Image 1 (cartoon, rainbow, N blue to C red):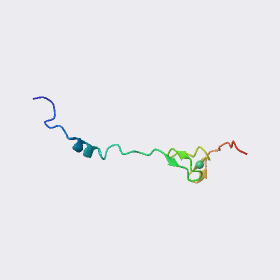
Image 2: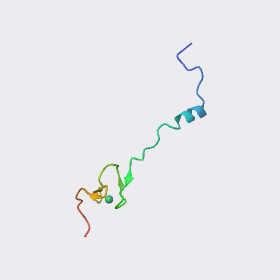
Image 3: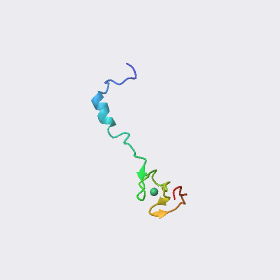
Image 4: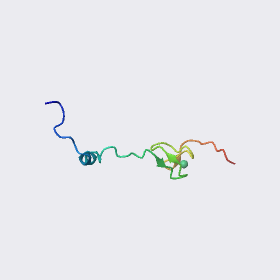
Amino acid sequence: MGALPARRISKTRKRIRRTHLKKEVPGMTTCPKCGAALKPHRACTECGTYKGKEVIKVEKTEE
Ligand SMILES: [Zn+2]
């Protein structure tokens, strides 16, 4: 008698159990204005827009 499980969980059972674990969190959103990839709840680093308002000044390298 040891501190081991009486039955080894089958590969299928293990996979079934893990189906709802580690759901991928995207972690990225896209700017609705310029389409740049962004972290959620952050102002856009490309155009400085957050929730439809320009909140930070982004220096333009063009023009
Ligand atoms: Zn943007």
